[in-house]
Image (cartoon, rainbow, N blue to C red; front, side, top):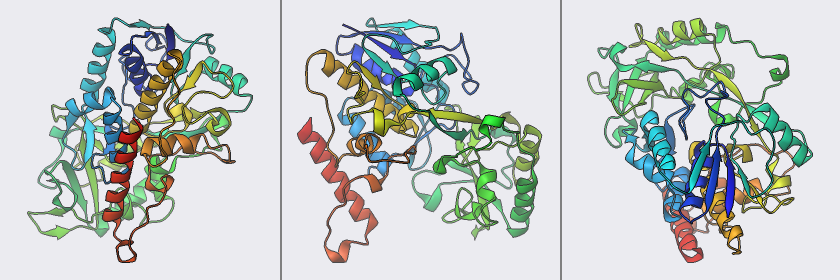
Length: 433
């Protein structure tokens, strides 16, 4: 038995490892470095492109529950992520280079996986998992378009800048996590009203990188909007979004500021930090001017500027079952962001399920369609729901799982509600497995 896995990103790497440990031979195709995507920086597998965070670690958050479910299902990359984690308050963030290298080493050491560095131009025959990601090459994208008999959907994604910690002025910046939860993991650059208004004026007047003609009607994914798009919605939008000051107090002054820019650790050496929520498509000179207008970053050294790129995803409701098997061809599965599961954690989880289900298909076993009460089950059922007419990528969230019935006096207690959903999900998954 042999499976071709197209793409060695997060989903493809997870799927390949799931198949290999079940005794199935895998040919893992990765086009980098033969052909670049324009967003990746290395030729290692499972590279994090936009951010180094997998979102909330706590189970009482939707993303945290998904991580717990992955662990219960025997996920491989979630273990590596835990081992490569860096401090990030209540989030699971990783040293992206260490994580990618660890995944690459594990795959290359696996005797059941053969790595093939070449571009796949069309959907192969045989047993195939397509996990080519949102940056799928044009030739393969055209082959997928012909298979699905529909035009591709797409949205735009943006990457935040990364800076050197040693170039930050800590006479102005301070360490803290919001509401002092966990250790003080974030660098915070505070602003008063005058400083914020200066920053805002620079931002809304800054020149952007011009979009190509086919990109002019760009759609943006709401949870990863460029900061200039957020700013265009109103002067206070950023102060109630990525720059909200609530729960961040500089203990040296005791002051809650008008706005705060947060930076999150990007590598285990604590030398690089990325700006939280600062995805952008501004021209590089404008990015430098904007960042250096932030108190504490006046002399900051930018090691990677923000960029924007187009992400492709298929019309999963018309194409996939909740098992991630295509309705049209039983030996073909899709996984990762190309399915419309948006987010790093979601991408890994879909690769996990696709790998498990491909192996079950090959061994003649029934495919897993996880209970709707689980986060992964709800997510895969959502993207495969044929009733969707205007399908858009989605993260894990409480809105896609069935509601829980609480006593009337407890219905407004969000934490208690989350705890009930988590308990129900874990019981459903344990019973199902």
